[in-house]
Length: 341
Ligand code: ADP
Ligand code: TRP
Image (cartoon, rainbow, N blue to C red):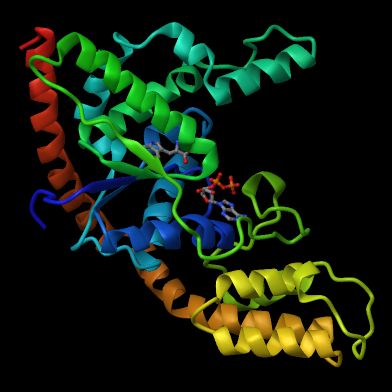
């Protein structure tokens, strides 16, 4: 692929944990669908993960495993641009320029920082306890990610919309000062349609999230996947009694995971639950079979990418080269505009 010609969408992926079923349904699939409509760029935001991950081996592992997961899930590096943030040093130079046109007050109001402060105040602590400057400056680095690629749209979950608005704000400040020489494109957040419910439930019925330790990781070996599915809580309604599919976490996972690939199984299962005669054990077997049928080939691709010396490194190196081409063009225009070059 050469330089994007149409509208550009940019997806940033923070490598801060093993990819799970909730991520696949709520983030990966909808983000991959955008490649049909936009010139799509995807990147692993490893320097963003550094604000919270302090174990170097773990950060290295997550960066690799999250990249391998997206590729295994169908990201096509030939049709899109896929790179690692830290492979594009231009981003970090732009980060400084942007921080010089960003008001501190704007950063004080950022959700993540404010939430950390509020928690501290509530606990009677100094408001800034445990807050590092990486957390504080996080939105500026994210603005640099977005602006350096001349991004049109940024697909995000609701919690990230403010960050994209900040990127637009910061671009506005820069354009106001230097717009005669260079203007950033103003990015827009879009919340992609997940085509499913908003939230995939986890093993305890709450939202599946690594912070709740209730996830089904995508690439578990088959026997472990089966065990986890067995752990999803159910009530003691007897086999023969009619059941409400929509109040069952097992059914919700089935329906959200397989709206298309197993539509007939989902419809038939719904009917059998409502009529009575299908027990929770059988429902779990159905869920396991549907999950495993779709995940098994992905798991194989994932494992192949995770082998040392696999194609993964080349794929990311090619992506970085392409991304740097675009970034260096923007950065040199910015350097000229501000009087550095
Ligand atoms: P986690 O909650 O496990 O920390 P992240 O916050 O890293 O997950 O989420 C990464 C992306 O995956 C976000 O776009 C988020 O909306 C999506 N996502 C995470 N968990 C779920 C879920 N249970 N259902 C739907 N989408 C989810
Ligand atoms: N902050 C995003 C998250 O936590 C990750 C991210 C970093 C990002 N840079 C980005 C997302 C640029 C979109 C565009 O999920």
